[in-house]
Length: 373
Image (cartoon, rainbow, N blue to C red; front, side, top):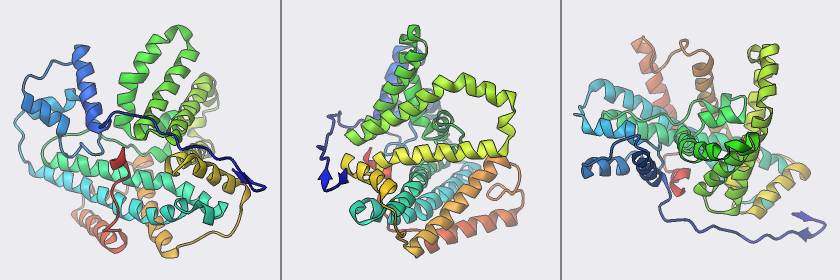
């Protein structure tokens, strides 16, 4: 941190991790553990097993599928059905919107800020920090829909990877809705065995299992001190919630707080802020940059840096995405668009989203964020 011309210089720390510790590795490990635990039978057809490990829509950024879901589908006769093609194309269209209009458009502003933290004030860094979770959601959520859509066209059903995470009222709920396939994998193969082993420690055992699980999650993302700290923060969030969970449930039940709009809205915003500030460690290039970002947010106020065109287009896309999630969360059977019973509404929706992609989407953007993990 810089204050009075003093700077705390920390070395860049990286951890040595195996090559290929990624999505297909997790799928292979999950298959091996399931066979060892006799939860599934060993697959004797090497072609089917190879297809499971290397199923091309999933190999780069998931979702992290399970053998008991995919292998039975691969062994069946897979037919190209018009209804599957239709569903898959709709998923892909929305996935392209999330990636090109939301994620890649916001990335222009966010990258300019986080790659030049020394030249920006705290208000600008704060705005970039608050937008970054939406960029990641559009990026990985968009890729997930593309992968699920391609698989659907081929006649394969793949698990969902996101479930409107920004309407969570706690971090525990958030992690049940965000990157679902990874969290389910970590829950089944890391957290649950650890929690069982530490059961004699009761609440302390749960907290220890949570901390280990999310530290491993951080190191899976990237073997650096930044993501180690990111994992510690997530584990701390969930550990604190676990310690007060019983009291919170009693309070919510007693006063019917789950039906209180102000209560729900406050905790939705609070949960989002907790995640957004933890993501500073995920987005910054080093621990020094992370500390500098927080220092400037607290101490260095100033006039916002505004790239008006980029922010306007990015916020239009983000607003449409969040309104769509809001509608699906609270009014699932109203204001239907892609799945409307009226053909005119469906085609109006398809054409509108397509035009938005072509008009304000970044068609020559960079790769997906999670390709590097």
